[in-house]
Length: 170
Image 1 (cartoon, rainbow, N blue to C red):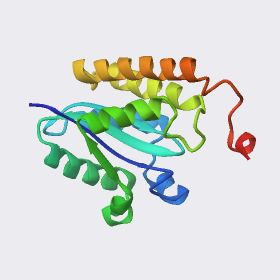
Image 2 (cartoon, rainbow, N blue to C red):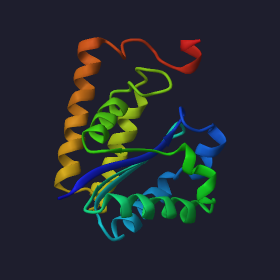
Image 3 (tube, rainbow, N blue to C red):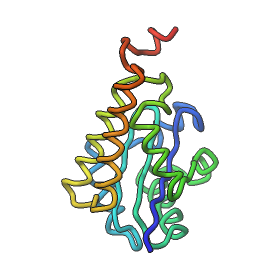
């Protein structure tokens, strides 16, 4: 049995200084995804890293070991002690992880609800994972459904009809 697990940190759980310490640049993302995908128990992985969040989504056959390995990986890759970020992490599994991806893709979990950039950033992260063959059947289905849900929410609610930015919201 494979589980879907999401591990992340965002603008709600950590200050920008901490998020910057564990963020992955575009150049680092491909390498990080490949390294994570080679770890035991990780069957599929997508990593998205923006100024407001770093989230890693896995398909795994050992949830506990994958979470532990991922925390260690983040610490080693970013050269930051695990204790510095562990309390800011959130972990979702199963349906909760899927719902979280839908909320993020739909911009319902953004600092400014309705901002349009997050969907493109998630599509880029998914594309990167597929290019390095780290996203398989399960995450393929999940992300295509998330893209559909996000488009539907934007269309049916008009959530993104106005220009959205922090300054606009103020």
